[in-house]
Image 1 (cartoon, one colour):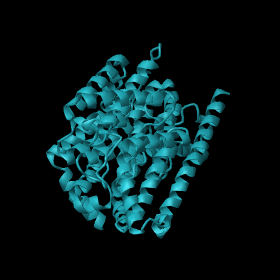
Image 2: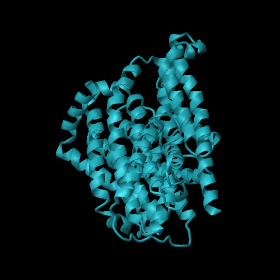
Image 3: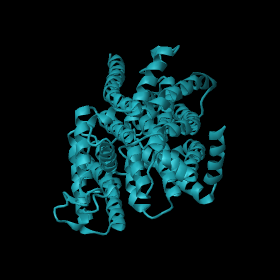
Image 4: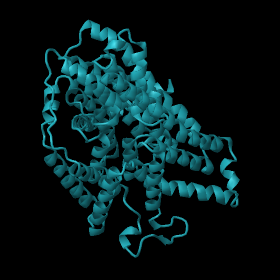
Amino acid sequence: MEALSFLMQGLSVAMDPMLLLYALIGVTLGTAVGVLPGIGPALTVALLLPVTYGHDPAGSLIMFAGIYYGGMYGGSTTSILLNTPGESASIITALEGNKMARAGRGGPALATAAIGSFIAGLIATLALAFLAPYVVKVALAFGPRDYFALMCLSFITVSSAFGDSARKGLISLFIGLSLALVGIDQLTGQARLAFGVPQLLDGIEVTTLAVAMFALGEAFFVAGNRATGDDQVIAIKGSVWMTAQDWARSWKAWLRGTVIGFPIGALPAGGAEIGTFLSYAAEKRLSKHPEEFGNGAIEGVAGPEAANNASAAGTLVPLLTLGLPTSATAAIMLAGFQQFGLQPGPLLFVTNPQLVWGLIASLLIANCMLLVLNLPLIGLWVRLLTIPKPWLYAGIMVFATLGTIGANPSPVELAMLLIFGLMGYLMRVHGYPIAPVVVGLILGPMAEQQLRRALSIAQGDVLTLVGSPLSATLLAFSVLALVVPMVLRMRGKGQMLSQLAAEED
C-alpha cells in the first residue's frame, strides 16, 4: 500500500503539462531512433546530455526514460520490415517477424510487437514501483565496505554482461577506471594524470566521454564499414490488425515474456538480449505449432518483444535503488543523473522522492503514449528508413560537436571529444564494449572513496572488505555476475544458432 501511495503522488507530479511534453518528446525520439538501424537509445541519450545541461532535472530524466522505452518499441519495426535489428535485443524479432512480413503478415507482426510491448511495459513498470521500496530499505543499511562491494558488483556486471568476451569487457572497464583517476585526488588534494593541463584538474567530463564514444565512435564505425548495397524495406500488405487466432496465440506469450524479461533486466544477467533468447526458446517449446518457428511464428515475435520491453523496466530497479547500471542506456542515464548533481541509490528516494516517483509514474504514461504512437503512425516510421545514412550520421556528428562545445566551450574539451571518438571507433572495430568505459569513469571515484573509508575505519585491514555478511554476499554475487552471463549467453546463442541451422536445412 505504501508503494501505491507513492505511485499516486508520482502520477500527480507526472501529469504536469511540461513533464507530459518531455515524456512525449522522449517516446517520439525513442521510437524514431529505435526504427533507424544502428542508432539506439544509448546513443540518443548521450547526444542529449550536453543539450539538457542546466534544464529541469525531472523533465530531462523523464525524457531519457521515454527514449529508453521508445527505443525498445521502435526496434521491432526495423527488424520486421528490414530484417536489420537496430539493437541486439531485436535479433529474435527479426528472425520470425521478417518471415511474417515476407509472407504478407507484416501488419499482425507489428501489431503483436506493439501490444506485447505495451502490456509488458505496463506490468513491469508496476512491478518496478512495488519492488523499489523494499530494495531501498535493504540498501539504507549499507556501510562503506558494503558500498564498495556493490561497486565491485556493478563493475563485474558491466564487464561480463556487455559484449561477447568478459576479458574485453574487463579491459574496457580498466580503461574507464584509469580515466577516472585524472584530476585532483579528493582526499589528498594532489593532481593526478593532469600533465599540466588546467582543464584536466576537474577530471574528464562524463558527458564528453559518453557523447564521443557512443555518437562519434558509432558515426566513424558506420562510415568505415559502409555497405555498398541498399536494404530493401518490405511493404506492409493487408490489415495491420490481428485476427482472433493471432490474439489467442499471442496473449500467453506476452505474459510469459514479461515474467522472463523483467528479472533478467533487474539482475546482472547480460542485458535484454538474454531475455529474448530465453523467451523464444520457451515459446518454441510450449507452442502447439513448433513447425512454424523459423517460418514466421507469431509467438516468436510476441514473447521476445514482451521480454525486451519488460527488461527495460527491470533495468531501472537496480539503477534507481542501488545506482547499478545493467545496460548501456542505463549507464548513460546514470551519467544524466550525475549531470544534475543526483546520485541514484537509496538516499535519492529520501532526498528527492518527488523526482523518483514522478519518473516511475511517467513511465506508465509514456507506455500509453507509445501504444498510440506506434500502430497509427507506422507509415511515418517506415519513411524514416529511407533517410540516407551519410546524412544521418553527419547530422549526429554536427549535433554532438555543437552540444559539447555549448556545454563546455574549450579547445581541450573539443580535442578530447575527437580523441575519445576515435577510441570508441577502434574499440568497436576490435569488439570491445563501450559501456564499461563510461561506468568506470562514473563509479570509479565513488568506489575509490568508499574503499579508502572502509580501510581507514579498519586501520588498513583488508579483510574488513568481507567482514560483514552483506559485503561478503555482494562480492559472492560479483563472482556469479562474472559466470552467469557467460552461461546464459552460451545457452541463448546456442539455441539461436541451432534454430538458424535448422532453418537453413
